[in-house]
Length: 118
Image 1 (cartoon, one colour):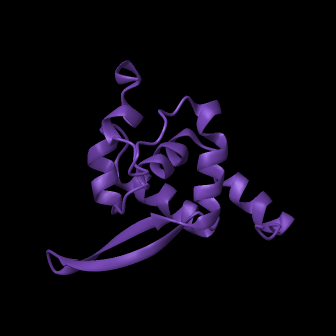
Image 2 (cartoon, one colour):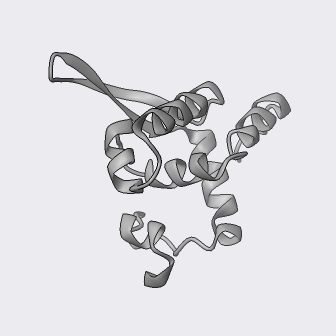
């Protein structure tokens, strides 16, 4: 049986869901991405805005840095969802109208971003 979650941890994680852009980033972070990659996938908000919200997700305990890679003389940081984010995403998926997971446990990024493909 799953151990009960600390209420403070749960409350902090739920605060991370308080902005539509953070929700979209969390959905896309089903796969490991950098803020730069998320910026390209989201096609709208500036890179600075996306980076800010990814940092907020990290501060709320919903994403962790998975790895870094050299890119143009700097390091590109890649993030993935935490167990808390996975739990909340799975729980809230029906309310968000997310497509069901496929047999391999993944959703297509296009389906997540384009409601017309649902």
